[in-house]
Length: 141
Image (tube, rainbow, N blue to C red; front, side, top):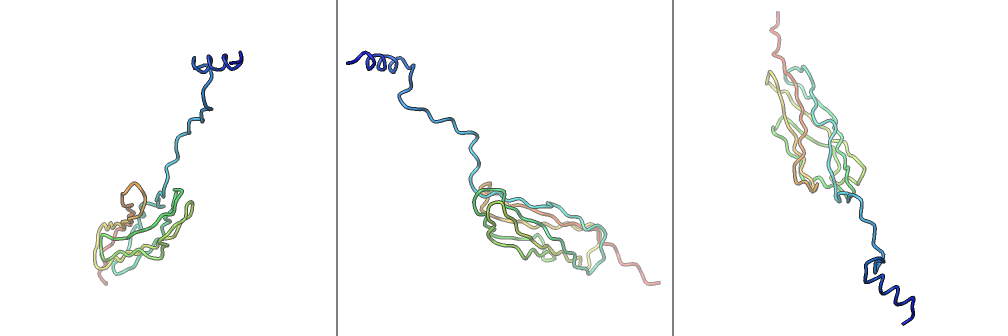
């Protein structure tokens, strides 16, 4: 064995020289998969009259790095409808979601939710809210 080969073997056994090049430690691994977000999360229409349909457009975003799939959308009341959105949202993209709230004959504070179930790995449904204060009709004078 040559002198250089013996020195390399001694250094290798002593741990002075790594046997293979070490790969750099990965920086904080980016979370894989889709991530759902909505803007705004809550919208207050303020004062409203009975028998009106109020409408607000929300923006549903995919902040992740894989396709976001909207699996289902449900509302807490038949007086609330969510429509006009794409079922698949590419990474970094968004879709509008129109939410309509019917005041009907209710009065007072009205708060309704829209629940969006998706393939976001968190497994949680995303909730957005619409609110209004429905005023009593004024008696005719």
